Length: 416
Ligand SMILES: [Zn+2]
Image 1: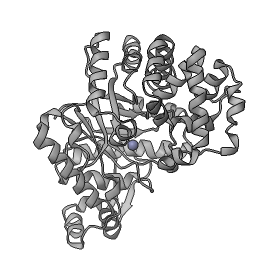
Image 2 (image 1 turned 180 degrees about the vertical axis):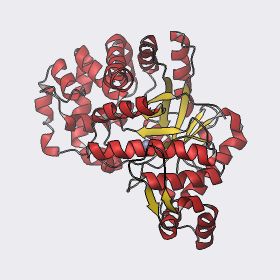
Image 3 (image 1 turned 45 degrees about the vertical axis):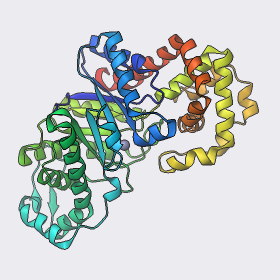
Image 4 (image 1 turned 90 degrees about the vertical axis):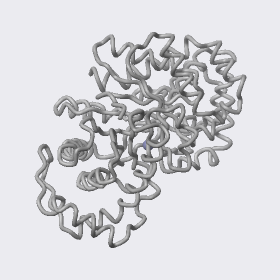
């Protein structure tokens, strides 16, 4: 298998214009002494909305790597793919996020469940795991219940994994398993059972994205119980270390946090846990880089600000349609969205302050930010006009992109 580094960080770049500015943040971090591998991620859904091809992600990343002389590893992630969507990503990706959330809850047959329970007596009873807050105690019935919920999903992972292996060769890609886009979070004891099942399927999983408790809305901070998250995160790390040893999973297996971006209040917790355990991390951010493009265009004033205001007005008029595909991962209070006339009177700095994610800023508006985050289709629609403005204002936009990743994400996670 292609080995993923201990620390990796996923960035999205909706329109493939900011790879260099994104990579600049990794360069800065490396200069500060911490090596984190950049991973450019874009899902099938995003490509469909924007009308782009997976190859464009690779090309943009490659050009950035060349321009900045980045000599360390970098990857391109076919994000949230399934058996029916993976093929167009095979050529240009070396990292595959196998999404089997849809298969969770499809009941496995009784024979298969019984077979699993019989194969895994170590999962029944009091399970001692080093580093876990309180030992798990399970019964056969409990294990059977969990297995019947996840077994088909894990078998589906096996199918996608083998499909990619056949096409690319097992030595040439990194596999992540994602179960985050589902209703109920997975507890650490469920994670252990899922890992045992993945080992049965002989999937060389290097990173796994469970659904954690609490809300991971797009582009805004975590909403939930921080104390509970910390316990769950630490227990997941302990479970992973245990499963690696017990089931012979890849030694570098680590958690992937599909953050939806900007889970600032979780960063100190994650950082402490990684320092204490020596564990690795893949942190995946969503496509908030496009919001930094809007911040830069607003600040540039003139035509850039005009287009940003137009996009807002259009988004406001079509709020229902734009938000529908993301209903479960945004919380917009429509009464907090100012009317288009009000926003048209704003200065560039004022508009930038409303979107830029500095929650303590008096002009910051999380509702506008979330609405614009899901409105990236509108920039795709503006097409050449949008891209022309990005080019003309490259320096000011790049500054926002780099600073956002480095100062607001990497510094608290890796440097503090
Ligand atoms: Zn995800």
